[in-house]
Image 1 (spheres, helix red, strand yellow):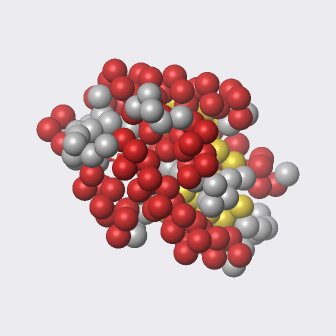
Image 2 (cartoon, rainbow, N blue to C red):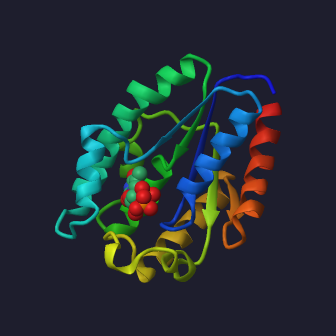
Length: 199
Ligand code: TYD
């Protein structure tokens, strides 16, 4: 396969397997001889580190979460994603703007999708978004119950899932059912990505 810069995002509810599948996809594409840059949000920046801490804290107002995720993303985009794309890399990001649009707007009635889009307008849209879909009851059963973060709650994630699916329909994102064995899900993701890269 020939390399050209391309920006892929794997997104979905907690426990859907975004991290596992982003990493397997990166390994596969590298094996095909492509230059891959694998990254994730929250990013490794100081804002990202703070966000990971806040994920354990229910007292953080949803608007603070939204603003910090947007700040982390703008830094992530300008300092990492954009420069790697300019160098010709294929970027795979485990979560991106869609996570904010969905999670933060579901978090509070005061947060509109339009506002989340506005504060994220500095970060450029990806070329391909794949949503991993799974029932939260199944996805949360994959997690250790004592260490759950504030969004890892079935009722909340039911709403998050519903909005991901609605957004996917509106925006034409690919949706892959991740309630199957890892190899099958990964194969489906690889097929979507390969077809797109070769387009
Ligand atoms: P993630 O790293 O995928 O969770 P884990 O490593 O614990 O499986 O994501 C962290 C959480 O942050 C997840 O609940 C989704 C949430 N999140 C948002 O609410 N908004 C965002 O913009 C991003 C990037 C993540």
